[in-house]
Image 1 (tube, helix red, strand yellow):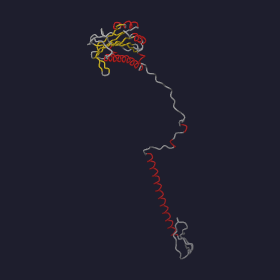
Image 2: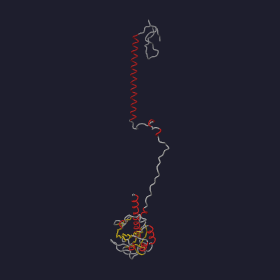
Image 3: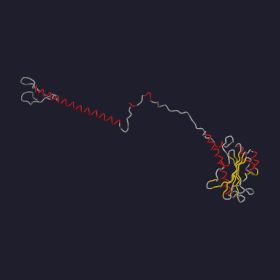
Image 4: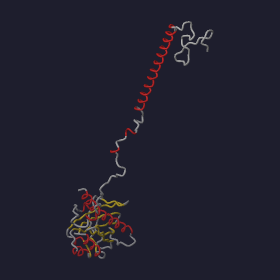
Length: 291
């Protein structure tokens, strides 16, 4: 670049380094070109104004972007993100070694139904032929027995036969309840003798194993049976109750060991009687537990 006569003139650019000033270093009298200076100043002001305006636009966009990001974060599906600033003060954090402690507890053992039928002191539920043998028939499996007559007496010996009267009396029998069931030409009378406690009932069970029976109970469509014929008799006990069965044919035929139907009837009635006595204990145990 030449700064003398005959060389090209460079336009001064205030934003361009080393650009020539708007006056000649070797002019006629060294006087500045004021018109050129004014033009350059106006050009400079315009550029500065444009730059500031553009910078403001950029700033506005940046602020708008930051606001938009904040709105998206606040309204997102995952909710506010937990960061270090959300943690509670260290003094309020629970200790990792702390574990909850509970006082040892244990449920009381269930009440035993057998305790309630073992003695007259606890066995206080109502007792009758209808509570022991309810309804008009008895169903055991697929077999249905028709219910006949019932009887209830405090004179236990009067409803017993063979050696049973003296056994009942000696052990303090207070009551003897009877019921008869029949099916297919076979009839059975069940007798339940009541004692003060379980020990007495067990004693009767042992003593009545041989030559002892409860008298058959006819009535309600069932004629006399087992008065002269050989019949099946059984003896057992549950709690303070001793119970007996006398089973035979209604036509007076003797029962033989091969008469399985008679033995089946005896088994059914023994099972049913035991279940009914045990249910007394269950009902009283449940009532006592709920009090």
